[in-house]
Amino acid sequence: MKRDTTIIEAGRRPEWTQGIVNPPVYRASTCIFERYQDLRDGVKDPDAGLFYGRRGTPTHWALREAITELEGGAGTWLYPSGMAAVAGAILACVRTGDHILVTDSVYEPTRFLCQGMLRDFGIETTFYDPEIGAGIEALFQENTRLVITESPGSLTLEVQDLPAISKVAHAHDALVLLDNTWATPLHMRAFDLGVDISVHAATKYIVGHSDVMLGTATANARAWPKLKHGATQMGHTASPDDVWLALRGLRTLPVRLKQHEASALKIAQWLQEREDVDQVLHPALPTAPGHDLFKRDFSGACGLFSFTLNRGSYDTIDAFVDDMRLFKIGFSWGGFESLILPTDPARVRSATKWQAPGPLLRLHVGLEDPDDLIDDLAKAFDRYNRLLNA
Ligand SMILES: *Cc1c(COP(=O)(O)O)cnc(C)c1O
Image (cartoon, rainbow, N blue to C red; front, side):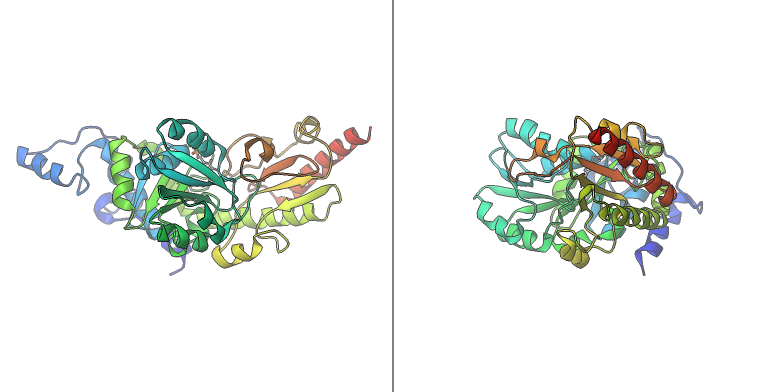
């Protein structure tokens, strides 16, 4: 079956819902055991049924099972944010004295974790060129235990050769973690490409309505015991209300994503034709770097991409973004609304050098009519060019 079909039924078990389509929101801390022997049995296998609120309720089980089904892994844990999922998954895999390899295009807060807490714990990070492919072999050390990938990368959208990287990592007995948020569970089969742990900021497209923080991490059979032990030892859990909203969002993900994808492509093509645009960083464009890998490994795109201007600076960019009617200035993405974010990748690069003649703008293309969004952008270009020409 196609994933558009699987997503309708994934995680829906009548024994968890008594026949209702969606599971209720189970708010729980204590679960009562009838007899002391029942508690003893529970301790032996706390995930066999209700045990304690932190370990999850049928609301959580439904989302965990749904994501596992879609991703194709052995199990999924839920976290209170996407960043908590990234941090929880990393900390479950490394210990003092280990070395990790992290893509230079990684989500900025993930970089800060590596340069902050992980360094303080005695875990050393080497950042690598996202387009390194099998060349990553040269960066392996005896103590390299984990490779962190993100494809396409945050802000600059480089596509990574995940099968090549995974092959080298496994030859060195290291695990591969992928921040898979951009592709959603629909557009990439991470485990088929050799990834061991696939992380999603469910905050983005899975929830899809800009009103919940939530993260998921799914592991293959090799990494699942590690991931789960890490999550339960650190006490990671998510609010059942938020999980319920994620389940609600999940069912419409395919139709929303189709619209985000189509509108974003239309806008990317429009931008590409403009003389005041330097580069459009959207892997689904045939001219984009990494397009061949994108075609090989992904089944679709989403509404998030970037472009660079061919003149001006981050000091003049206010004239572009300040008075937009539909594109709002803000972090995050994946909701129904369009967003724009000027941000300089050069600030956070260490293994590669970022160069562009003008500022970079990241767009999240929402569900508005794309022609209205193009009109909004055209007016922003006019304001920007008027300022620079004055
Ligand atoms: C937003 C984001 C995260 C973090 O998710 P939050 O839910 O905001 O903590 C992680 N990775 C990527 C690629 C993201 O875009």
